[in-house]
Length: 215
Image 1 (cartoon, helix red, strand yellow):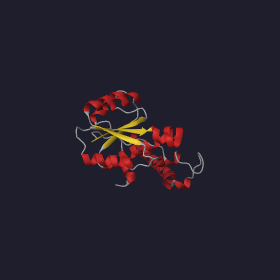
Image 2 (cartoon, rainbow, N blue to C red):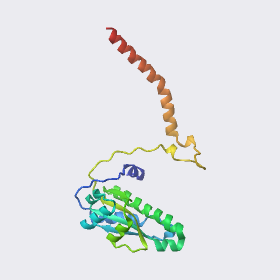
Image 3 (cartoon, rainbow, N blue to C red):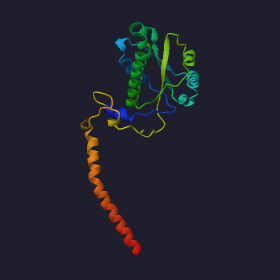
Image 4 (cartoon, rainbow, N blue to C red):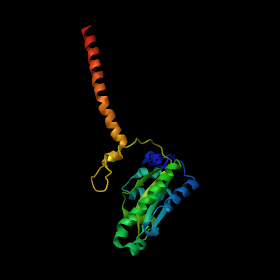
């Protein structure tokens, strides 16, 4: 499957089948994370795989009681070793680069999981201190997100999206170029050409209805 098709197909899933994940698939998902880009190639992230039922329940409670999470057989807690990245890049590294590289790793895992027929949900709402207690995470390591992973048991409809032309600018903020969106331009032309035809059809429908009433 083309990577763009895979991206469009992905959904955040919150219902999972009671089916374990094969070891080789889990390793591929983790391998995908390992190849994500990082600031200065420092690879400051750490990944904690959680399968234990009790710990998964504790993590769900720490995630503001999102107990639906426990249906997934595997959690992957994505953390960053802040001392390492701060040493090289200071506050910007700690507050920005650390988040960016963890996000890149998570997206890699999500797409690899999708390609393997697995479902995921990226969870970012949680009590950080509680997560650290459950997983024995030291002070200089911060949890950034929890990725829940399993075989999905729901079909989520395609979410609405802004049109590309509404979010893409060129050279400066709010500077658009219509020629870069030819499909939308063609759609406008088709709509303009179709409008007179639609009006004529409406008129015919009105005539038919009027004639039936007279009868």
